[in-house]
Amino acid sequence: MRKLILVALVVFLYVVSGVCQSGSQPPAKEDSKPAAPELKLSPEFKEAGAAASDAISRIPDIKLSDDGYAMRKLDAEKAIDAAGRKVSADDDKQMMKILEAWFALAVMEYEASAQHNMKLFGDAATASTYCAVEAKVVFKPSVLSEKGRQMAAEKKCLTEYRKLQDGAK
Image 1: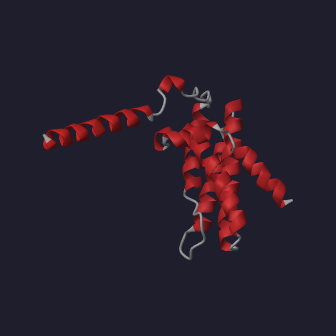
Image 2 (image 1 turned 135 degrees about the horizontal axis):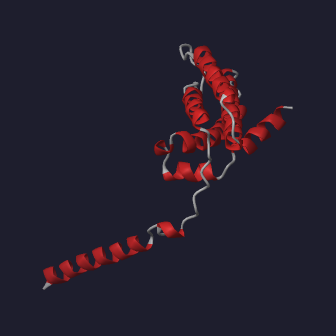
Image 3 (image 1 turned 180 degrees about the vertical axis):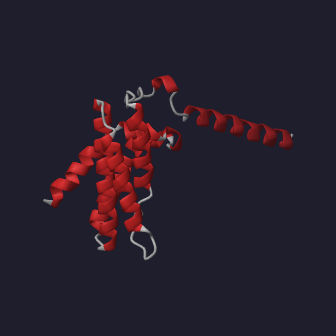
């Protein structure tokens, strides 16, 4: 009889536990916010912009003695210049602003690290992350998690970049 009561109690706890967990599940997809409208980039710019995005992402975040910063920065500058020459549509122009802001923030982040300015480093890193996800959602959406896609939908890259620019004046 004791074993039967013990088994019944264990089964009851599992059932209650399962019900509690199912109640804490996230809402279904149809309840989530609609995705941001996709940018209509020209094919030429999309290719050049993807190359610029890749180049910017290779700029190191922190200063190390053998980080290859100068070469990676130069590669990113060249890629951004090449992408700038391919801009033709309004959406190309918008994405170009994001790439340029991301590049400037990556440089700012690295230089703040070299100067041990942790406040500026943190602010630049935060703003840079917004720019990175906004670029990645266009050029490499498969690398982003759901949280990354949500962050990109917030469209904070240029706002955060302007805040840092205004603070530097």
